Image 1 (cartoon, rainbow, N blue to C red):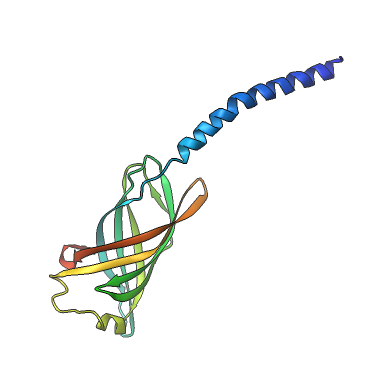
Image 2 (cartoon, one colour):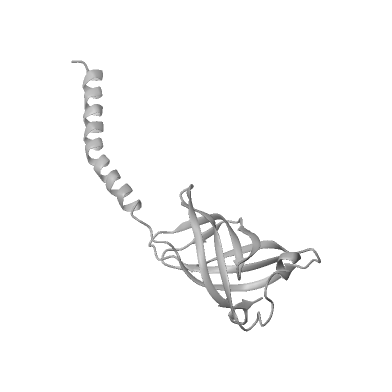
Length: 168
């Protein structure tokens, strides 16, 4: 056996040894990273604002504050939701900027969308500032880590009072 054959068998033996050690370690790391993640917890709506007022259509915005109960830092890439107020479809609201979500921390998703003034007239505006309003949202959000993103559903329904939402 010459020196090159001996060097090749040493390299092969080291590779085989490393493979036996690293493969289970890599599987353990992947299993820990793929554990079941909890859905974020809704906290509140805030910063409701009229961004642009028009006679036929107005653009409004609001923030949705959540709490991330996981010990994993993630990124929210984009979100979209159909929003209903008192069963009246207001429109599709979107968020299209990256948001970094810390481990076990609160985070805010800013949404904005256009509302037809004709749809706004379908709302029961009597005492809207002082009574409970049913808000429902259905859509999707892209959440990920290390450049790998997955779609997660957004499903929310709750009663709110406009006089209790922080305005901008």
